[in-house]
Length: 97
Image 1 (cartoon, rainbow, N blue to C red):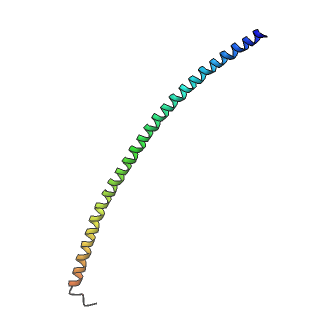
Image 2 (cartoon, rainbow, N blue to C red):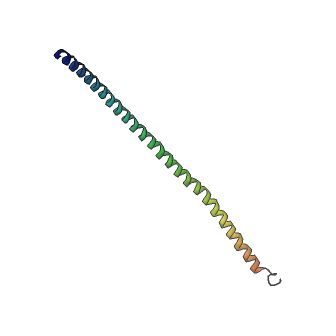
Image 3 (cartoon, one colour):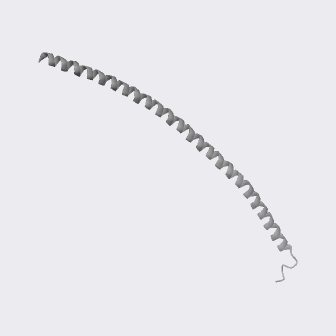
């Protein structure tokens, strides 16, 4: 019986040692995976930040590209309106009608 107990103890100890090695390898793998995941998250964060910055810059450029011509057209229309109103006021045919 003592011999069987020693054999069982030896077998259990060997299995515990194997389990310890497996757990250590698993911890190493998880640490490596975690490090890679963090690096990828940082990379994606940089890409998204760059994309948002570019989008903001493009939006600003488009707004400025639209605003300037619209202001010019509005100025031209206001000038034409003032000119036409002046011509109508000075028209010799104004009182007739």
